[in-house]
Image (cartoon, rainbow, N blue to C red; front, side, top):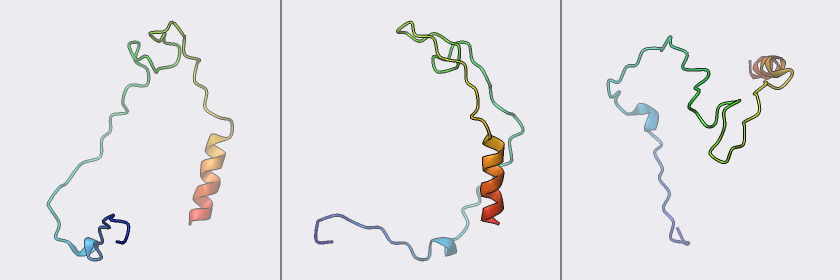
Amino acid sequence: MPDGEWVTVSPQRAQRPWQGEESSASDSVGVSYDPDCYLCPGNTRVSGHVNAPYTPPPGHSITISLLWDRAR
């Protein structure tokens, strides 16, 4: 390239041999609230600021369904 940058091109990427990795779906949902997490809602940060409670935006499920319908 004239500006000295490199570009990686791999046109046969989908045709590479499979490496054998398999993973199973996880049924565990993770922790929804951690009392020691300084980012979780309602917890106090080091500065003394208390995080506001989290509320999902209104219409969140409607927005996702509209986008899903358009993608089909």
